[in-house]
Amino acid sequence: VDFYGKSFNKCAVSDIVKNSRHFHLKRTGGKAKLHTEMKSIVTAIKDRVARYGDDFSVVASGCDEECERELEMEMEREEEQEIGIPSMDPVLEKPWNFKSIFSCKSPKK
Image 1 (cartoon, helix red, strand yellow):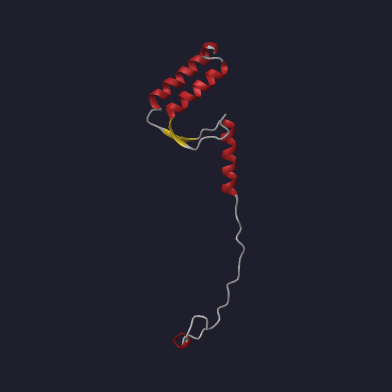
Image 2 (cartoon, rainbow, N blue to C red):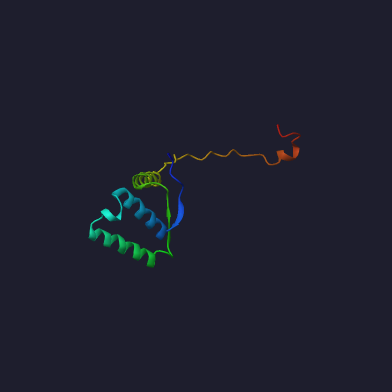
């Protein structure tokens, strides 16, 4: 059992639709158990993707839909989270005797 989703990958739209179609047909008992109208919709989607989807790709994850939504919400929360940086007063500089560097015998003095 894979407890962790795969990382984001670039996938062809046609492959995603094919995998999704296969998953849902397997889940619902196959194409033979679909209503006639639903069969025609599935066929129309398959034909449309075959015609227009081969040249396109999307970035997708290996997560299921519920995991995808949770991941989306988490990413949105991270983006929306504003981190307030406390304001600080600058340190006042002390005057420095520049001539002393030429009379100094060690860095400690």
